[in-house]
Length: 403
Image (cartoon, rainbow, N blue to C red; front, side):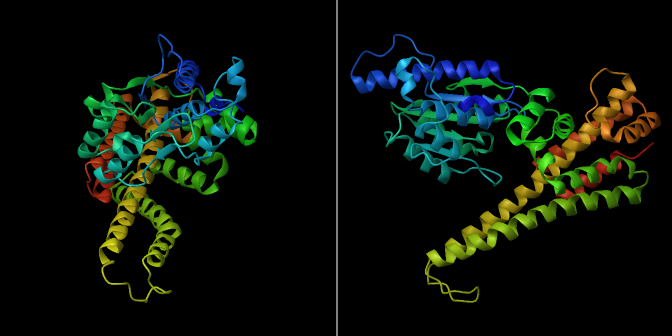
């Protein structure tokens, strides 16, 4: 299938990227054939993809990377790059292409060390493909120092290197970097478009696809997870019951504790799945004997400590991500309440709990609902500032109280 098939509801962006891929193909062909390059081109060496969560920033970047590496013979006959079937497209999309580096992080930030490695790679000529492509899916997590390292590479790019940066908004990227990138803005796909792709590509029942697409308001990855993961559905249902449990101080504190505990349990599960394997693999690579009690070779303590620190940061990131997802669901609940209070024609996202929405809507006014939404936003901001999760969530639940 064409590489653009997974890019849902982004026809304008798809056309721009397809045009750039055509010009990029013509440029490489001219270089390899020793002919004159095209007089004008829609291709450039650095791109910045922005858009809200679920809009498909990373999907667009990976699809563009695949189109740049497309080797389909149909291109010579006027076909579009990005067939989806050739070796260049296929290996890019599954993450094994030698000249495509896809960078994502499960930590809170991306530091200087990681970006220096990327810059060194970016200076290399393509080994087997047509371009050297660096896809940085979490450009918003670059530290200031790491961003300055990237800046130098973007300012002075190698002839056939392309940087594809992804971030939620322009403000999440250093001004000096974004000023040197071509900017593409993605929008949240429509609920119908998300439901269609879930049915067509993932085989989800149409009724289920429509329900989860509506519940997640166009966030395709979350919609797919809700449709296929019973645990995710149960956790979301528990979060949506929280507004009914904050009638008194005791209820507020208990609800906050349960929310934070659930996020901590998520982080613990990830640690159990990944940390032990990582630790054993590193111990083996360093020459330690079998078993957790075996002695490590001299001089390896620092390496093991670095791994432990990384694992700790990953647990923190997982806990924050889980809490943020819960807060997003809570915001959706009160958004529906506000729509009911104002008599809006906006579709209700959480139609399956309509009686609960009606109950909260009748018990308060729009002003109170807006203050509750502001309390959730304040909680998210506090978590971003490294406030202790329980303190931030307790402050929020106290603000959600009736009255």
